[in-house]
Length: 360
Image 1 (cartoon, rainbow, N blue to C red):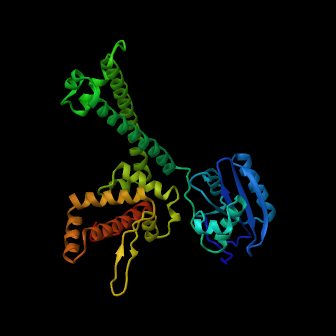
Image 2 (cartoon, rainbow, N blue to C red; image 1 turned 90 degrees about the vertical axis):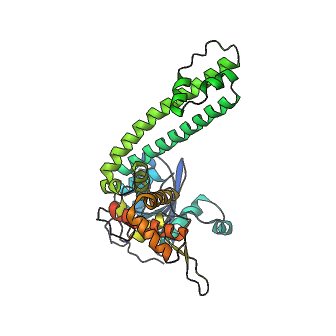
């Protein structure tokens, strides 16, 4: 069983009860346990301000120092998690039970809530969830909108190209050889007139798609401008680091949230980004492999930074040549570089000068 002290939110007082919460879209289920594991009560409440207040008032009958162990702090439980953190309550994030455990004990909301509380008592749930109420949450929201706009723009461009394959010959010949920007501006200026045949219908469809692309281009420009301003304000050192642009900075900031102090070491940050090396040794062979877990968007960002530096950064190129001479494969060199970059990014996010390495 876990110790009765947990230094969270700057506190080291012993907790007097643990509340496990199973989260859903419209309601949450809470189960409260004593420090010795005994079940004290159960509550179902709505995902509203009144429901959250009901939970807090209900918890006060069991003591004044609760710990909330929650599933889904980044999805259905985000609102409750923010409220509890803003009120200085201690909150830990709980992973959902694996399928094997769920098959053994069944699936039920109170059972899942109790399992969340017991995972804290067992010492397996210790992660402080991301706080989402400041600049980084703004960045995350705008990044979602930007990614959606890019997806829509790519889809519309592909549809324009697809329509041109089967468009009337005269229209295909007219548009043949145009650059992408010229193609879009030409299609956007079409005047199809009355829909009296395939030619008019093709022009109407191409004009609709082209104007959609132009609107998404304007939307992307505005979103990128906002993200540029916010990322510069949130962590200027990150933006000045070699190979990290607006999009990469937004991903890395969103990975740690508005409370980066919750990540206690550079190794923990590397694990969050899936850049921590994993043992793959057997017998006399000592070996590490790439980590395929963690935040895959952050991992992809570290990968892109490493590729850019391998191509243009002289120190990184020299490091890669040296490690290649030592017998490392390109995959192993890339793994090492991602770990070095994760270390640099961690210190920048913490507001500390980055530690210099052979690859930086």
